[in-house]
Length: 251
Image (cartoon, one colour):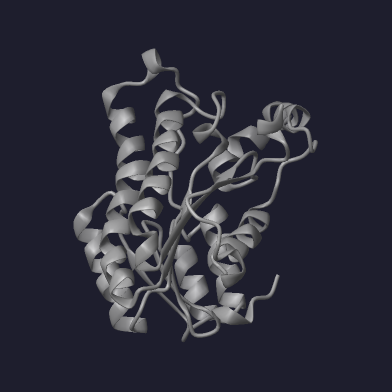
């Protein structure tokens, strides 16, 4: 999918070292964007830097740390001069733990990354976007933000929070030139769910069978949707959560 409009624009992506975040980063780089990544894992980011030495820069840190977030956003602005698009993609799964199996440490870890991290990144970037009267934010929700069964208690709660946060931030700032939407993936084959494919891959087979489309999706498919949602073509889409789930939530 090609969008000439991204040439010269700057995109900030969290969780860019693997899975959906990596696919999003590569998609925007291939479309000519400058890209700044924030992740806790450096190895894959070094590969991207070698492949795109001018377009790509990164910072190592956690989105749950206000210091790391502040530093990353400052570095992005110092490197590229502006931030046009923010992709809040980084997130953690909870192993489908029910609430009685969720201790406080797990709850805090999921909420700190999935919810607080999105909040910190948004608040760090938003003032710059408002000053320019232009900006697009795409948050990563999940089918677990729309229905039960897509994760455990903490993960499902966190993704429902992202859905509400997305709608409220767009409502509060859309007249300031800001557009905020979210993507709700279903079964996407990423390193986060690699355990489902181990051994006889019984879990992966079951998920595919339960998905009306009959298969898992690839991260590149989510990246293509992101390219569209962040583009001018989608300018009238506001505060919306777009499922990409093979029909899971249609059941």
